[in-house]
Structures are given as structure tokens and as C-alpha cells.
Amino acid sequence: MTEVFRERIAQDKNSESAIIGSDPIELKSDTLQGNENKASDDLSQEEKKLDIWEGLKNKRYIDEIFDTHNTKDEFTIKMPTSEIDKFIRTELEKRGYEKTTENYKRILEEMETEIGSSHLELFKRFTKITGYIRALSKLYKARELRDKYRMTDDED
Image (cartoon, rainbow, N blue to C red):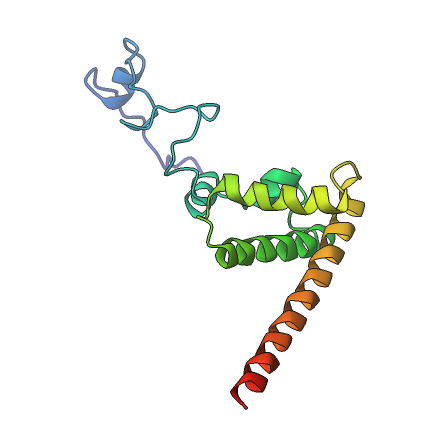
């Protein structure tokens, strides 16, 4: 058991470990060239588009509005936020608005001022908004059916 499995190799002064301990090396900035903006800087018009904003931030805009970053994957939060997000996106399309963060927020604020939910705590707010969305969806479907049957009556 007196065998030696490794032998110590004498270090050369030009070796890599000798260079590491030498003079400090000045490193360039970690930011990419042309991307020196800070998170607090105002976003450009291009970055205010909803899909681009979500891609840059790697989160949904609805989670930013309700500040549900840490709990966004919980079922009790994920379901109502998904329902609200889906409704607002379809409203953007129906109204012909550009899909920007400002328009997204404007539609949500319209809904909340109409039902008065902005002052409530988070879960009560979700409940009230999703209830409103379900009622509006039923109203839209009823209007669609009404218009459809009016069109068939006019043809006769």
C-alpha cells in the first residue's frame, strides 16, 4: 500500500495557474452593445407592444399588473389571471386596438372602474372581475344570436 498513484508536477511559470495569480485583468461590461438600457428606463414604442414586453420580461403582463410574480403558478391565481388575460386580449382584437401594454391596462381599468373592484383585496378582485367577464361573455353571445336571427328574418 505504499504505491503512489499521483505524482506532483512542477509548475511552469508560464502555466495557466501562474497567470491567474498575476496582475488583475480589466473585464469589459456584461451588457451587450446597444442594450445599455436599465430596467427603470422608459420603454420604446416597440418594447411597449404586449408580446415584445412579455418576451423581454419573461412573464405575463397580467402578472405584472396584479403583482403575482411569486405565486403565479398557484391554481387559485393562475385560473383567474388566465381568464382575465384571455378576455382582455380578445377585447383588444374586437376593438381593433394595437396590442400594447397601455391599451391592455386601459381595458382592465375600464372594467375595474365599471364594477368598482380596484380597491378590493386580490382574491375578491379576481372573483369580481371574472364574474363580470362571464356576464359580459354571455351578453356578447346573446347579442350575436340576436343579430344572427335578425339577419335571417330580414332575408325572408
